[in-house]
Image 1 (tube, one colour):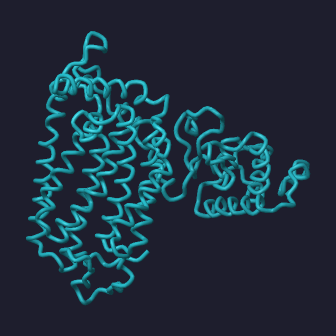
Image 2 (cartoon, helix red, strand yellow):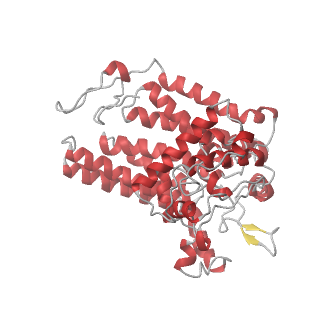
Image 3 (tube, one colour):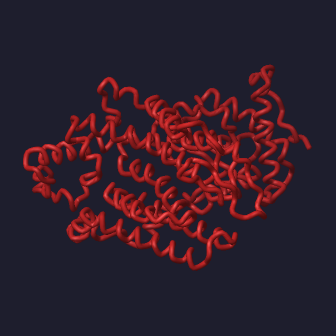
Amino acid sequence: MKRNSGAETREASGKLTSPATSGEAAVPASSLTGPRRETLWAAVTYAVFTMSLGFPALAGKFLVGPNSDQYIAGYAFREFAASTLRTAGHFPLWNPYLFGGLPFVAAMHGDIFYPTFLLRMLLPTDAAMTWGFIIHVFLAGLFTFLFLRASGFGFFGSLFGGVAYMMGGQVASLVSPGHDGKLYVSALFPLTLLILTRGIRDGKRWSWGLLALVIGLAVVSPHPQVLQYLLLASAAYALFLAISGTQGGRLPARDAAIRIGLALGAVAIGGLVGAIQYLPVREYVAWSPRAGGLADYARATSYAWPPSELFNSYLPQFTGILCHGSHPRRRRVRGTQGKPATPGDLVLDWHSRDGNTLGAWRSHAFLPHSVRDHSRNQILPRTQQRLFRWVIRDCISGCRRSRARARPTARTEVSLRMARLRISHRLARHDWNPDEHRGRPRRGANG
C-alpha cells in the first residue's frame, strides 16, 4: 500500500498533482491513479460487503439481537416517536408509558433528531432501524475510502482500508446489540478526518460549513461518549496536519493558525446545531437518577483500562486472556489480591509452583491464536485444554531451573516468546502423542 508524503492532493479534475516540495520523494502518479469512476467502484464493493452481513434484511428480518436493549426498549421508543410524528405532526416531548411519565427528548430516547427518523416516516419502524444500520456500515467504508484517497493512498490500498474499517469488529458488531449511536458516530469519524484534510491541508473554504454540519449530526446521534472520542481524535489529527504542514514548509504558520481557528469555530457551530437535543438534557439532569454521579475518583476510574494491560498493546494477551467456559459473560483473568494479572505475576507464578501443575488460566495466557476457537470467541473444550497444558508444561519446564523465584527481566521475556514458538511448533507436528507425553518425566527435574 503506497502513499505520498501528504503534500499530494486530488484536484477537481480527478488527477493527482506532484508534491509541492522538491526535497521529498514523490510517489509515481501511476501507482496512485485508480480506475475511472473509482468512487462508484468502491461504493459497489462496500455495498456487496455490507449486504454480506445484512442480507437477512432483504427478507424483512430485524437485524437487532433479541437480547439487546434496542430490541427490548429501543424499538418501542422509536415506534412511539414515529406514530406521534405521523399523527400529531411534531416530536413527542413526554412519554406517559414509563412509570408515571418521563421526558422524551430530555431523557435521550435515541436518534430523535438524527436524519434516520425520516426512514421511520417511510418504512415500518423495525425495517427503518435495520436499514439505518446497513446504510451506516456502508458509509463507514465509503468515507474511509475517500479519506485514505485524499491522504494520498493508492486505490486498492484505500479500498482495502475501507473494508477493514467497516467489517472490523468495532463497527460491524454494533448492529446486533443495536448500538445505533455508536455506529452513526463511527461512520462520521472518517468523514470528519476527510473534511479536516481538505480544510487545513488544502485550504478548501467549503469544508468548514460541512464540518459544522457533520459535528452537529454527531451531537444529535446521540452518543456523547463516542462523540468525545471523535472530537479528541479529530483535534489531534487537525494539530498534526497544521504542525506537519508548517514544518514541511507547505503551510505558513499564520495560515495554519487561522485554519485551526476555523475548525474550532465549525465545531462550536456544530455544538449549537445539537443544542436541540442537549439543552433539554441539561435541564433534566438534576432530576435524573444519575444526577448524583459517582461516589469518588476511585469509583470513576474503576471502569478505566488497567495500566498493567498497556503492555498488551505491544504483546497481545501477555497479561492473560478471558477465562474458559461457555458462559458469554466470562470474567477477566485476575492476578493476586483481585488485581489484573501482570507479566510479573505470570513469571513469578512459574517459579513459585512445585513444577507438577500449572494454573489453567496461566497456561491459557500462552496459547497461540491458532488454538483458539474464534468462531465462538471461547477457549477450546476442556479435553483440548488439558492437552495444551501438557505441551506448555513440557516447554516451560525446560526454561525453569533450580531458582525458587526469578525477576521478570528481558531474558525472561525472551524465554516466554520462545515458549510460545515451541508450543506452536509442537502443535503443528502430527506425530505428537499426548498419552505418551503424560508419563514422560519433566525435563530438569533430576538436575
